[in-house]
Every structure is written in C-alpha cells, then in structure tokens.
Image 1: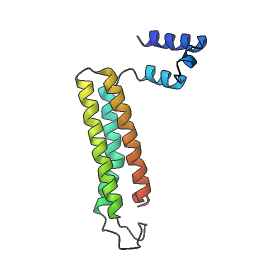
Image 2: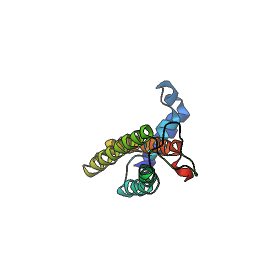
Image 3: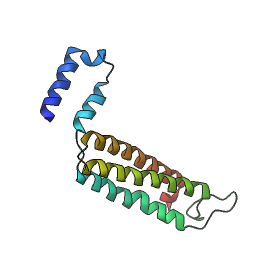
Length: 139
C-alpha cells in the first residue's frame, strides 16, 4: 500500500498535477510517510515527554515562588506563578493529545490517529518551548 501511494505521489509530481491542485509536495510525502501510527510511536512519545517536559515541570513547580522582580537563575532558583500556570495548561493539552491519539489508534481510525498524533507532537513541542523559556533547564 505504501509503495502504491509513493508511486502515485511521484507520478503526480512528475506530471505537474500536484501543483494544479495546490497541494505541496512535502505535505503529500508527509501524508504518505505517516500513513499509520503505531503503539510504539505513542509509547516513545510518552516516555520522551515524561522524561523531559514532565520531569522539568515537576522540578519547576517544587521551586519556591519568585518574589516581585526576581527571575530564576542558578543562584536564585524560583518559579514564576504565571509561567507555572502556562506549563500546567500545556501539560493538560498534551495529556488530551495522548488520550485522543490512543482512542483513535484503539478504534482503528488510522487517518484520525495520524491527525491526533500530529496535533500531539505540536502540543509537545509547545510544552518543550515553554520549559526552555521557564529557565528550569539551567538548574
């Protein structure tokens, strides 16, 4: 099936039909290469998320709250309440993404699982960016 789809993408690309329909070649190739999501991909995403983002979020939350005008540093470990709220909200979005992806995979909805997984990856990247912005990675 993957070979058939790959051949179709190549044929459309060569014939110029892809350009006529406004589809970007990279999007088409991405759709073919992400045709299905496996439990292994979800499990890997979960362990990576837990080990990087979630562990950092927990460390950040355990720090004392920063005083007015104070910022996190090696010499002054503290957390900003607003940033902590953003991190917790991002974690909720990621958790929903994991649940949605798992449900789609369990029900055999391949296209739904691919979409849910792509959405999950965006949520994880957002959470990683917030962790980096929080400064907890310097501790």
